[in-house]
Length: 71
Image 1 (cartoon, rainbow, N blue to C red):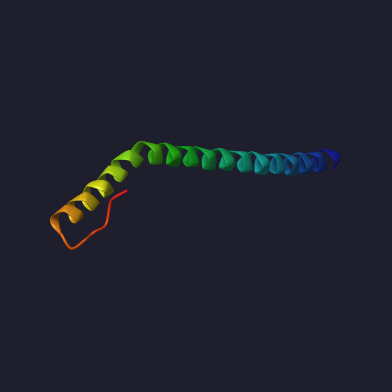
Image 2: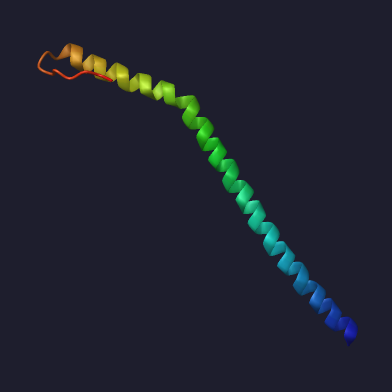
């Protein structure tokens, strides 16, 4: 009987340990995704800014009624 209770207790403790490891794994996964987003923003930021600047310049030079500046 004691062996059975010890097996149940060991199974319960191992289940609790796995729950903590899952939280750490999810934290690492979220940190990895956040790092990937930061790298993508810094890599694509200048390209997107140039596209907006080119569009604004094209609009202001082709239409003489718009007196706005691109910044």
